[in-house]
Length: 497
Ligand SMILES: [Zn+2]
Image 1 (cartoon, rainbow, N blue to C red):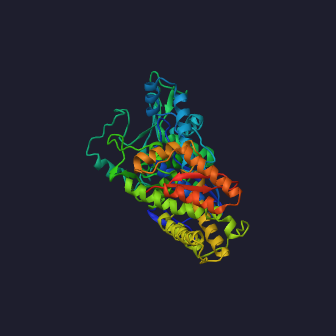
Image 2 (cartoon, protein in one colour; image 1 turned 90 degrees about the vertical axis):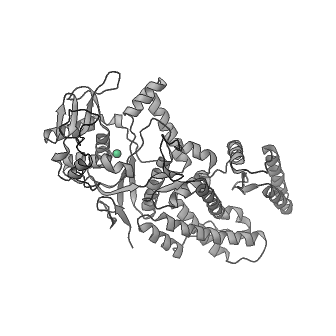
Image 3 (cartoon, helix red, strand yellow; image 1 turned 60 degrees about the vertical axis):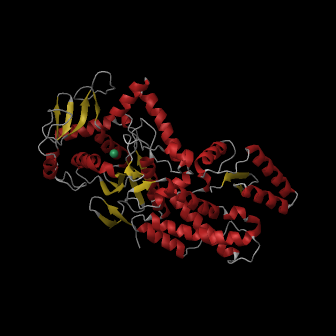
């Protein structure tokens, strides 16, 4: 069985064959850095992170590039409002972006090219398009003549005729009458007073948005790449225009496969600032474990819309707890299980089922059903070990199950390390929020928890395991779960009710 993915170009699942054997070049359209990222960004970058991780799992050497748009109308406006320079604003939100992505365990890209560092490359492409009579200059602006690119519309599957019919005769747009044709788009915009500009053969100005990606793909990955990805809202016009620019410039296909992820709705409605249901990643992570967010997103197929509700998040939180327990099974039972870390993971039915699910256009909901199956087996074993009854499976089998779970979770980017379980301090805030939002009644002061943890550590040192277990149970009854770490540290967290 081989990997098949849905290619927006053909509207079909196609067998994935990279341009170069065992290498995959991916370009993902990145953020415009003028504000905090929202849940839509979380979804997109989690989805592309899983695509990348799975390709790596399959043995591909993946080169992942994601751009940063650091010059744009929204950036200029925000910088003016906040009375800061554009660089101050963009640097700040690049940092915030990095924090959000790290919380969600999204691997860093191999490169994050910035638009402002690729102006020369953009000018070169624009000039070549003018030379080919595909672009034209009006005043200090340069436009792309879409009618000169015969396959314009091939990605979004619309023709210029149908677009024009849809426009019902109203062809003038906000950019005025200077364009020759209403669907022509700006490659270069003449400088306006007070805005940043670069010099060009057409006078001072700045690039249009679409040309940025054409230049950065070419500069970072070459003329043809394997996968170009982004949100469904980028299909038209952004990706259509990227294709028109790059393919008219090079005469080669820009990408072999185009992939698009679905939207995030909030309580059944499309997320938007005007509806005031706009959720930043930051605000969501104040209430929910980042891994529960990741799980929630992967529970839907990446092309389907997804509905963010409290119920869905509570359910994801519970599911993550089950998986999390499974992931640390080896830590919790190291002594009892005669744990052998070096035991090699053998191929098995679960891994085969996982591959089959992911090979089918990255079907993460099916992949997660395998994760739950494994976590449930470990839960059963945990119960039996905790109650001293005879093990259902032998240690060898349990180790294989646990390692299979680990391997699959790694590939899905689900990790205990990024869970809300943290050392005191950070967790206090988390706990307070959980308290107000999840109505946990049994709050006990952090000092008391720390004291009990210290007493338990001492008891373990004295080999008084009965007392150690008693303290653990006492805290559990109060809604506090203890998690022992390698090296003797103990973390704790509230168990949501
Ligand atoms: Zn782009």
